[in-house]
Length: 328
Image 1 (cartoon, rainbow, N blue to C red):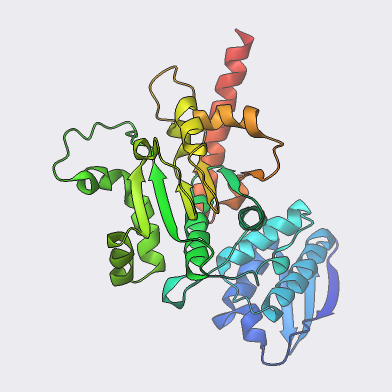
Image 2: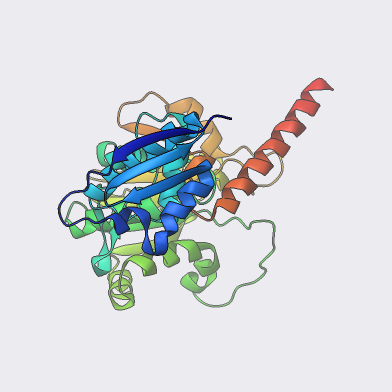
C-alpha cells in the first residue's frame, strides 16, 4: 500500500489553541489516529497527515470539521469526535458544526445541546410544531431533550406549566401492591421523568413547582376529561398506549399548548395482541400541518457506544426472525 501525505492548517479563532483540538495529553489526536489508521504530525497549526489516501482525505475533512466546531465554542469530547467521524464517513450533509451552537438554557444555568443530526431535527421540530412524535431506540435523548425544551419554555414564559405523563404499564415485571398516595404509587413508573428534572433544576425549585402545580407528573389515565391550555405536555413511553388512549391524550390539547410524544416501538409492554397507539397514530396523522414525526436511529444514541452495538444486534436478530417467519 502506497503511503499518502497531505498538509493542512487548523484555522483556529483567536483565543482558541491546538490543545482544544488535540486534547490534554493528545488524547483526541491519538483517538483520531487509531480510529482512522493514520499518522498525524503537528507543528503549531501546521498539520501533516500520512496513511492510505482515503483515510488521509477523511482525516483532513475531520480536522477541518472539528476546527469549525471549536470556533463555534464547542468543547470537543471523545463522544463528539466519534460521532463526527461517523457523520463524515456516512457522507452526512448536515455536519455537527451546524448545530453545536444551538443552546437550550435550563435550570441551574445548565446548557443542553443537540448532539446529533437527529437531535437537531427534533429540537427544531419542537420549536416549529404543536404536536411532535419522537420515535426511536433508548439513549437517543427523546425524553431528555423534550424536558429541556419544556423547562426552557417555562423559563421564557411561553407556557404556564409543564405536564409529564406516562402510561402505567409494567415492563415485564409485576410490582404488586404499592402503598401510599397517588404520587407514591406512580413514582416507580415516573422515575425517569423525575431523574431528568432533577438533573436540570435545583431540588428546592423542583418541589416548589410541583407543590404549586406548575409542574405536574401524572399517569395517563388522569388526562381523561381534561382540556389542557397554556401547557407543555410530554407523553413518555407512548408505545405502551392503546389506540384509544392515544386518541384520548391528543384530544386533551387546548389553546397555547404543545405536546411531545416519545416512544420506542421495539419495546412494547402491552398485553399480547394489543395494538400500540404509537404505531396506529403514524398511519392516521402523518401529513397534517403542525404535527411532526421525528425518527431516531442507532446513530443518534448518545450513551456509551456499546449501547449502539446492543441496539444493532437486536435489530439484526429481530429482522432475521421476521425474515424466517415470512418464508414459512
